Length: 290
Image (cartoon, rainbow, N blue to C red):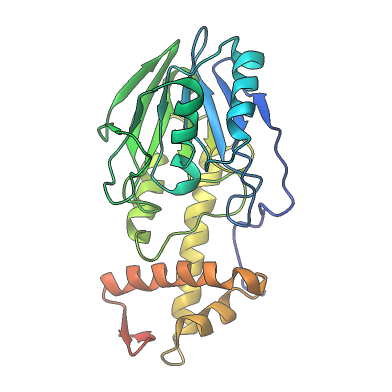
């Protein structure tokens, strides 16, 4: 039997999401209006709470039309005019890029996240959320969970009342997330996924793509996918050292070539994890087994 090329087989390509929608009595989503090859239909921002002003979780990328969509969602779905405040999963631009425009439209809302000083430039002060903070909103309790790997400041938020998790970019509604080879850490990412398996989970609200109703299955699938990629990297190195793009072309045979640079970032992340474990070495831009 031929070995599988990938575990996660769904994709963001061709997905569409509504501008805004109610997902549960406590959760509504507003699309960030920033579609792209890595954001899919766009960033899911969330309104979390019941009665009155909900918390806004993430703000999208700063697309001009977003505040209008957010205002319409607040009125239609929450009977509200203003969010109670902003909480952020991490400092990548498609998550914090809209903070300034949200504040310009709705006033000087408090914006909270785990600090990443080199990236936290949103035009106004950021309030620190500790790694294990508990955040209260109208009828909701959110527990911050430190989940580094995709980004060093990444927080997921566990919604106690629904046994639900806002996963940011740690788990997506379709496809897999990129582990940046400059600021990401695949070893930490896998540790984060394994810790999420310990939660009592019924739902995942991801930052991109549709809601996930089989959360434990999805997380296990993500772990298995990375483990398969690691085996593929090791197998590709068995016949001698190679440059990263050679490995990409051997492993990502089912991925369009215009996405190979993103795949190369993931391959480098695997190689760095393996180097940290003493299993591979790099010499003059070529990687080989120890």
